[in-house]
Image 1: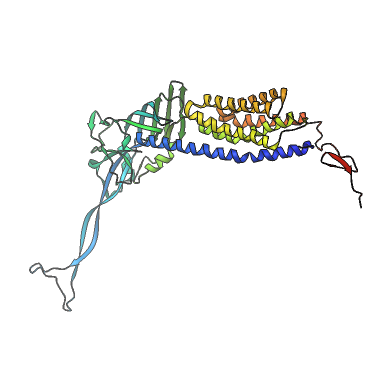
Image 2: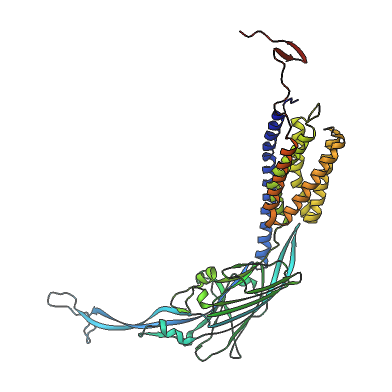
Length: 470
C-alpha cells in the first residue's frame, strides 16, 4: 500500500496518536470504578467509626470578674413608692453603683506530660466485591497539668472557678467509642459524659473533675473503632506516643513522623516524642486552640492498602500509548520488506486489543486480585496478537519476534505497575532503548521509497509516456 517507508512511518505515527482516544475512554472507566470503590470504603468506614483523631485532654477552667458600673434610675418616693418629679414635672433620676459578676474567657490548659499508648487490631469488612480494612484501638493516656501556669493569663480582678473545672477530650466521632471509658485521677474514678453537640459542633467526652490543683496523676482508657486513619495531637509540653498494630502496610503522615518504627508482615510499632518547642500551641491561654492542634500538631497513621489495582490500571492506561507505539513499531519493522505491508485497519485492531487489555485487567482484578488478573489479561492479549500476526499479518517466522517483544513489554509493564517509585525510570528507559534500536535497524532504510523513472507515469500498474512539459 505504501511504497515510501517514510510515508508508512508517518501514517503509523498518526494511528498511534489516534489510540489516545480509546485509552482515554478506558481511563475514564477505571476512574469511575475507582470512585465507586472509594465511596464503598467511605461508607463502610463511616459505619464502623471513620477516621479517628484524638486531640486533648485540655483542662477548661471558667473565669469570672466583678465589674462595677455607674448607672442611673428613676428616683422613687420611699413613702408613696411613686416616681419623683421636679417643679417642671420632669422625672427625677438618681445615680448609683452596681457591681455584677460577669463571665470571662475560660482558661485552656494543656498537659505538661502527655503519654499515649495505642494497641490496634485490624480486620477486613466485605461489601460486594470490595474489601475494606478497619481497626479497633485500645488507647491508654497518662498525663498531668501544671495548674500554676493559669496565673500567667489571669487578670488580678478576675477569679478562676477551679471547682467548676472540666476535662475535655475531642474525637472525630463519639459513635466510634466501644466499651467503657475510664477516667482515673489519683486512683479515684470520675464519670465521663459526651460533649453537647451545640458546643462548636465538636464531638468528644468531658468530665467535671472539680478543683484539679491538688491532683497529680490522670489516666484515661478508651476503646474505639476506626477506619482509614488514626492519629493524635501533640498537646503535651512533652508528648510521647507509642502505637502497635498488626497492620503490615502503615503510612505515616501528619505534622510529625515517628522517631522510630519497625514494620514487618506481622504488623508495625512506631513511637513519637514531640517537645513543646516543636509545636505552635501555647501551654495555657484564654482561647481555644483545638483547631490548631488538629491541623498543625498531629501524629497519624493511614490504614489503607497502598498502590491498589485501580491505581495500577490507571497507570497502565497512561503508559498504554508507549506499549501500543512499541507494538506498532515492531510490526512496521517486521513487514517493511513485505510486498503487502499491514493495512492501517490492522494497526487499529492491534491498538484496540491492547486498550481492552486494561479493562480486562480491572475486571479480573476485582474478582481475583491484581497478580492473577494481570497474568490472565496479558496472556490473552499476547496470545491474540501473536495469532493475529501469524494469520492476518502473514509474519511467518517473524511472529516469534513479535511474541518476544510483547512478552518483554508486558513483563516490563508488570514491573512498572508493581513499583510506583520506579515507574518513570523503567518507562523512560524502555522508550529510549526502543528508539535507539529502531534508529539502528533503520540506519540504511530508504525513507523516500523507489524513484520514478523520469518521463513516465504509473497508472493502473502500467507505465505510459508522460505528457510533454510546456
